[in-house]
Length: 178
Ligand SMILES: [Cu+2]
Figure 1 (cartoon, protein in one colour):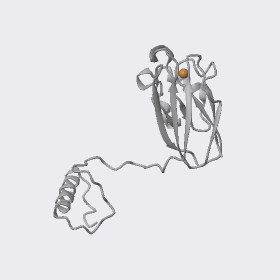
Figure 2: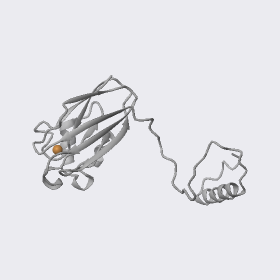
Figure 3: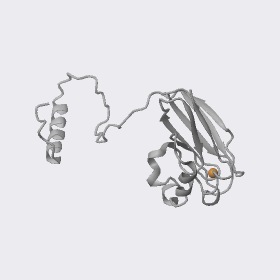
Figure 4: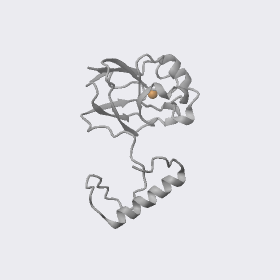
């Protein structure tokens, strides 16, 4: 609290060491931080989502179709989308993901930019701000889940597959937030 003027990495290092020594001495005044790990050097997560209140089971197939055209979720809740590629074709030729976009996103521009981003799983870096959530790109038989916080604004949000050409043949749907 008193060393607020220290902003250098050296300062952080000293603080870290102080924290270690402090922990070593073991004055158990603060029982709220019970990180049981022996050497947990990982920084705390930026935002811990709440408990998952709903899991959406999505499938995608070799016919470039999702099983759902729409699904509904509650405002501000934490939900999980589980996507399984139930097809058999490889990721290179028939990959599928699910990308949930913010309202107002130009979907056509998004998927056109995605074509240029195979190395980023067809998520265009310049438009990552438009993405609420997305899974990995999946080949036949693979699956992936993504957990995210539903926006606080009611309305319709588009989800789509950003593999080249798939949005254009209808690989998209609506996430209804209510
Ligand atoms: Cu697809």
